[in-house]
Image 1 (cartoon, rainbow over the protein chains, first blue to last red):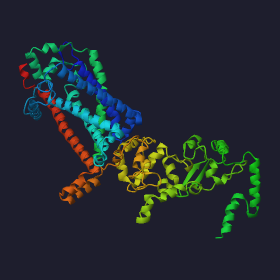
Image 2 (cartoon, rainbow over the protein chains, first blue to last red; image 1 turned 60 degrees about the vertical axis):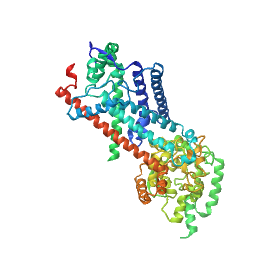
Image 3 (cartoon, chains in turn yellow, brown; image 1 turned 45 degrees about the vertical axis):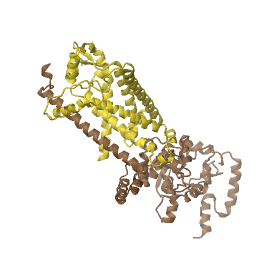
Image 4 (cartoon, chains in turn orange, blue; image 1 turned 90 degrees about the vertical axis):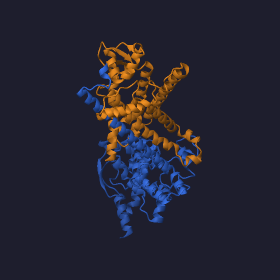
Length: 283
Length: 349
């Protein structure tokens, strides 16, 4: 929001903003160098692959970005470990602050569907909306799957050494890894560039970008509109003031858009090309 | 027709009527020995000297009939030295006269005679590939089952293949086996018959990289694994991809591989509809017999197909479910903004 003189609250701390930044950089690097292989028969794939130096340069970039992803994943779990085991903080696995599925998410989904159908009002949410949890959990699952299959494809000779011949002649691990890596990648890239973009950044009320993940800040109006239950809870617990921050300057907002908009456009073009390829294939 | 007469006719055009032939040959040999302009094997200099410069050539272009296809083309008499040196025949131990043998020792003072004999690749040099080819499974199928299999010209197309694909190039400029464009062409040539194998190759790591146009020697094309002329079915012991030799074949690129590595499926059938059909027929035939079922399911190709189908399902479900969710959410927000409906509890704040 470019409005001045608004009350602002901190939604994402520096650590989470930095993590999201790392994921953006590595994810785009991985998709732009990897997707040409999955869509190898299309002209754009060849062009994109050459843009990143072709074989084997694009492969090296892909592996460097994979290492950045591993680093981001390591940071995430180290953070979780410090908070849960060292600082003994509660609420990471259960309750309103947890990113794991809670019973109330089921009711939220039902309430949301009612709202879609026009039979109910827009439901109010707590800190994490159910689809945000789904996105988080699929990122965790997806990263695990991509990392394991990616490492198998990175070191096929070493990996097959530990597989007995009897097993290898029935279960071809590198081939399974390739299929899983390719289609999980299409799933992840397609999901982020369409569903994630349209659920967060490209909502009619956020267009073109939800700045919260870059500046960390949301206005009071946004807070109440999106997560009223959390707002009320914090207000009741008299915690709200501790989250209060100065609004971000016009310059910071501008920088955020300067960084995010080209990336969003790149993602949309990618998903457009991927979807058009599917149509061509289906026709 | 009188053989002698035909022979003398040919010779007559080359070096004068019958009885003067010996004298003519002797004289030209003496001249060749004395004059520096005479052409000798072992030196490309005099050829390159004229054939790279338009002003030194009497004839710039000639019509040429392809000895195999009968096609008539206009061929330039200019040689691009830089290109020639990168080709299979451009090595330092090859000479123009190795192929154009009728020019060996020719007198170049007035320029050489205009019409050269067609170059006979097989008699001069390439007799080994034929020997190798005769041992291949292609030939075996031809002999035993009378199959229509590719012979030399189907792949080499009387060498016209090279110049049609590489632009109007002469057989002189036949590219080397390491030439990326040549390697790319060989995939198309093999794939023009082995369509299913080409498609499944494209679904694997090697094939997806070559599909993007990278065909240098660090990514294998068909012949790197299956061999060039003695291509044998993988069931044969001597085959490069057979049990005995596969470790050595894969090992050319992949260091430190074990017996499990070579169990890799290079041609996955995941997108081959016919494979699914045969799977279904086999399943129907098994009639629920656990032993038969086990045999069908414990097959690496079948497992790959199951993984693939599973992923297609996951993709279809995720995108349709979340796509509908996103669209509905979007429309609901727009609808609320139009009718100015708020949240369930918003009135209280």
